[in-house]
Amino acid sequence: MKLLRVGTAGAERPALLDGDGTLRDLSGVVPDIDGALLGDADALARVRAAADAPGGLPALDAEGLRVGPPLGRIGKIVCIGLNYHDHATETGAQIPQEPILFFKAPDTVVGPEDTVLVPRGSEKTDWEVELAVVIGRTARYLDSAEEGLAHVAGYAVAHDVSERAFQIERGGTWDKGKNCETFNPLGPWLVTADEVPDPQALELRLWVNGELKQNGTTADQIFSVGEVVRYLSHFMTLYPGDVINTGTPAGVAMGRPDPKPYLRAGDVVELEIAGLGRQRQELKDA
Image (cartoon, rainbow, N blue to C red; front, side, top):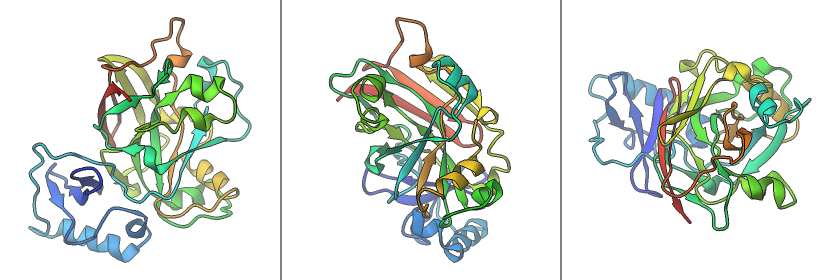
């Protein structure tokens, strides 16, 4: 299923994109797309039954309707740094022996076409297309990557916007450059795991002002999706509705020759992952 949330910011309602591309209203079946739904097999079964029933879900007019983040009430966003071989190479970093972790606050999440704000004082705002993994079952102390995959509810496109000077040059942790307002567009859809048979075979692309900047595949990940979930479960409990941003392939501004083409107000970023949808954001000054 392709689940999404539509409407004005803070007042989104649940919806579903059917196989014909018609937007369907889910608000009569479930109150929201969130961890409570993803962790409830019976509720998900009701959604599937309604989606399969002829005339079971009313159509929505998508014209002019904002698409919000496909997941509400996110618990935590755990991010994996330097998780692609080619990205580690372009930044001159050593291949990590274990996953590098940082966090993004849930309030950085916006919709896939919402405005992204360049922070005040920023000179190095960067782009990163990423595969987001959404947890559907409580995970703690998992034993294998296969178990890790079994705890995934679905996948989405994430834009891990980053301010490199804040991240690297201002002391402390990476979190300074990762948690600015609007720095995690998510969506358009949450695609359930049954529709993604191999999360290590997804193509990721990103354009800035129409120029292709990133063109990668999750096959290049250092730590696979299942392994990342397994690994994290030994350091923290993962709950339904938690999100994992799994890293970005090569092609970021930081990895380019000087003068590096960092983002400015007026730039337009578009990004997509095959089968998971496409985003578009215009940047403005905060």
